[in-house]
Length: 315
Image (cartoon, rainbow, N blue to C red; front, side, top):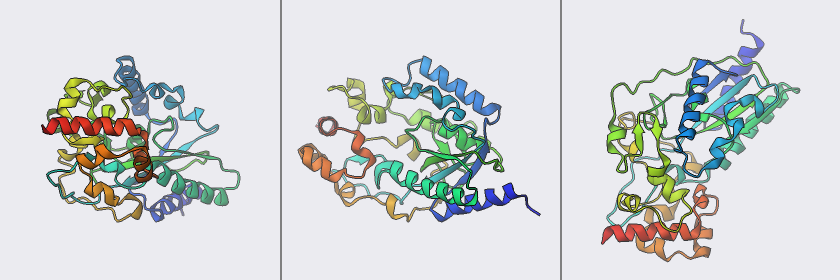
C-alpha cells in the first residue's frame, strides 16, 4: 500500500498535468551534490562577469531554496511546452524568440501553480508553499535537472529527451515531504553544434554563456542606446530574443510534441511583423500589441533601436 506521501506526490503531479504542464517532477531539498555543483558553477559565471549588467542574478536567495520558504522540504518542478510547430518564414519577416510568441509565460505558469498550491492547502491544511517562476531567485534549471525533467545542455537550456528544449519552467516550493523523482542524466555527448552555430561565439565553452556576446541579451536587456557593432552585424533579423542554439539542437530536430495550449499560440501580429512595420511602432502601438506579453521587458525605444539595426543589416 502506498504511503500518504507517495499518494500525495502522485496526486500533486496529476494536478499539474491537468493544468497543461509536461514534463513534471519532484526533487528533495536541499538536493544532491549536483545542486551544490550547479551553485558553484553559477558563482564562477557571475565572478567572470558573464551576467553583464543583470545584477539580479546575484541574489543570495538563488543559491538556497530554504531562504525562499521557511521549512521547505520539496519542490514540484513543471515544464510548459511552447513549441507550436515550424514557422513559415517569409523574406521580410523579423524574428522573435519562440518563448514570447504567446502570452506572458510568467503569468501563465504562476497562475496555474497557485491553483495547485491552493489544492495542496485543501489536502494538507497546515502546508506552506511558494511559487517561483523565472524572475524569482531560484536555480530553476538545476532543480529541473534534479527532478528528472531533463538535463542542462551545452547551450545552457534544459533539454528533455522526448520534448527537446522548447519549454519554460516553474517551481512550487512545499513544506511537504514529497517523494522525489530520479535526476536526469546528460545526453549531449560529444555534440557541439550549438556552440559552433552561435554567430557571436557567446557559448564560450560547454554550458557557459557570455551574456556580453549574446544576441538575446542585447536585444532584450541592453539599455544602452547603441549595441556593440559586432552584435549589430550578427543580429540578422532577431528583433527580440534568439533561438539559433535551440533550432540547431538535434534533440529539437525530431518529432517533438506540438503545443495546442491557447496561451502559447503565436499572436497574429507576430506572424505578420516586418522590419518596416516594427520601425514605425510608436509608444502607443507598442503598448497595445505587447499587452500581456513577456516582450514588455523591451522598452519602445529599444524595440525601434533593434528594428533599425535589422534594417541596416538588409542594406
